[in-house]
Amino acid sequence: MKGRRGRGERRSTGGLRRRLVITFALVAAAASVGVALTSYLLVRQVTLQRATDAAVRESLLDLDEAAERLPPSPTTPEVEALNARLQQRGAFDVVALLGDGSFATTSFSLSAASVPATLRDPVAAGRVASVRTTVSGSPSVVVGGRVLPDGPSLFFFFPLADDLAELTLVRNVLAGASGTLVALSAGVGALAASSLLRPIRRTRAAVQSVEAGHLDARLPEDGGDELAELARSFNRMAETLQRTVGQLQDLESSHRRFVADVSHELRTPLTALTTAADVLEANADGLNDTGRRAAQLLLIETRRLRTLVEDLMEISRLDAGAAVMFWSLVDVADALTLALEVRGWDRQVEVRVLEAVTTWADPRRLDAILANLVGNALEHGRPPVVVSASADAHHLAIEVADTGGGIAEEHLPHVFDRFYKADPARSRRDGSGLGLAIARENARLHGGDLTVSSGAGGARFTLMLPRRQAPPDEAEAGTTVAQSLHAGEVPVTQGADAYPNVDQRR
Image (spheres, rainbow, N blue to C red):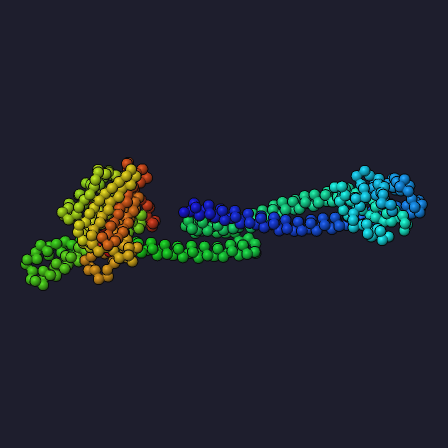
């Protein structure tokens, strides 16, 4: 989970950086394209208008000269000679339309058909007109005018290739500048994203440290912006959390030590009470009825108190991390048979082990788990009670099932809670409510777990353990699974009475 979360967070920060860079680039692209397009259109308009105005001025001068040089009714050779003279004054071509329908031109690619139709009527009316058009595949400015009222009509074709080449150069320069601006904006966006994400990454790292239990993680509070205020707020929260967790840990440690101390101190007087109760039970024949009932009640409650104290001492060892594991090779079928025979349950429980299964485990703790599960099934379930075992190369599963009424769905999440009893009306003789909690902790000391399921056919407890082909390494074998939570606390060595009696299931 943590690894996936880390990758998700890297993707989220990478996505934020990408979005910032894209945003900067898009804004720069929109701005640069707008400026470049506007600039290009303005330059194009000015350039073409300037070329048109120049063409009109040149055409007016040429029309004046033609009026001076041509006779009233010029012939075609005279018009051709004039056209050649006019062409020498500039880089343009001339098409002259004579009154008899003939024409004279200075270029083989031009003819009377080359004259734009939009100019014919204005020129015929005696006006000078111009138009920008494409003639023979070449953009040009065409200016037309009439020489004298009865003279020929002259049309001047000024090419725009040079002007359009200049406009193409301007367009390319603007496009290159726009691309450069977009790239620079993306770089600025990347720098801005890095400077923005750096404190975010520090905050994320600090949050992950706190999540991992390092409550002393802090953020630098430099600056006066929103991120610095966020860092200050985080530091105040972390300090409060560290202080609160420290107080809770001290309180929990105090409670655990209190339970362990009280349980330890109760063992001596409890032993004396148990001995006295046994003596009373052995001599109950010499007591009257009231004395015998009192002796029997004393014996029952003394034994229950002994069980409770032993359970509390075992819980204190587990909480303190002082539980000791003694590993040995265990035959599962033999362990089940022995656990049932010792307690006289072998005639009440069916054992199903299809093949020989062995694993490395702590025999005493495994016996305690099995005794708790089978005893609860016999006491609170209904026969037949079936214990089955199965295994593969890596795992071992032991199931204890009964055919009773099962466990209500609302109680299933709390079955392994300490001091939890599903039925508040249960007798005080039903146990302390610690048996299943201890059984589950013993399963976890083996590297496994204990689970429960229930249905109309009864309850089923499943003990899952790793199937070990060799004893654990030296760091595990014969040593405490975890160090004591309190400095100077001496772990209690497990003896024959270190395992709880069967006391509860639901």
